[in-house]
Length: 454
Ligand code: PHE
Image 1 (cartoon, rainbow, N blue to C red):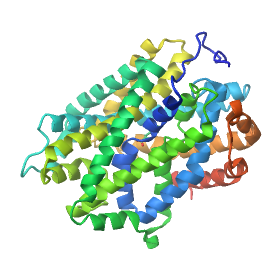
Image 2: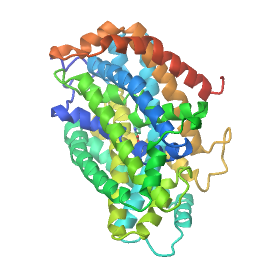
Image 3: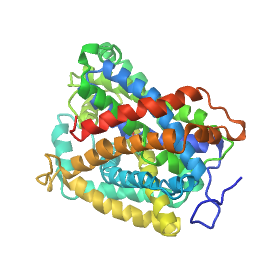
């Protein structure tokens, strides 16, 4: 088996230690604030169950086929997100699509580290018994914290230090080891919270909102939001699967792993909904209230609950851990690139990249407070980063990815990669049809819409 065909490395390439290493780490990337913090409020804004169905459709028909393709690129190229394209198509400009991925990860981590820092802060507040108090106004407390000129940056920097320390240890001893510990913890916490929340009084109403579709709520905005959610939540078209796939052994099934990742990501999103909506309805909170849903709603809920303090610790630990495993992957994509491009060791590449991202990210943190007056097209710095990365570059890069897989590298080559070591590629014909004809058209429409052309 060739582990030495990277274009610019003379040591053997790192690899995952066990069969589950890749899957858990990729699921760790997928499962994150996107499932727990973002999913509930976009479902709330998108009118509930009808949105959820659309999201599920996109995950299966667009997400799963693209994940299979992206992993194949990484495993074939055995390089960072950009150079993997170069290995497959030398003498072409397709590597630029991989480069877009590196930029996207850089930009997402800049603001993702800010929200993850909030989660870390709330976890520590809960742990030290300082989160909950009777008569406390949680709106003001949260607002005061995120607009402060210093504290959000301190927590963001702390969070990034943890991420750098893990990535610095490498693929097996850092990323894989920590995902193996953190992901199962996450599932246990999740199950505990589902039981608690669905046994609340009025849980029924919340479950209905979440699970009983009202198709009249669907319009083009809702469709776009559901697609955006599917992409962001699966970490799709960002080079994560290429990078993590490049450390993957040939004997492990790509289709099987892709299926497992999609299952886990959807499972956590659905369970997060089962936790959040019963609670939201129980306390009469507007499910469409937006991004602060988790940080404001939950403290109220826990204040009112027996053993609330313990549940607050569990819940915010859960939010923090899920964010951490995603932040690890966001940093790893950039670090793998920096390390291989500039021939640096991981020990140098990880902290340097981390410091640059934290510095840029500090501006997105400040855009909730002191820099909130700086706007472009009505977006704050935070909003602008989110918009450019998640709504412009990701669909654009996803579109190019389809063209690359379907028309440049070609489906039969992808099939050869997937079927290595006797592995199967079930429904290959359907995959090929979706990748060549269906997904690129859908993505092009979305892209044109997001930049305002349609
Ligand atoms: N999928 C992650 C989440 O749901 C976010 C993410 C996006 C991570 C893109 C990596 C790349 O929170």
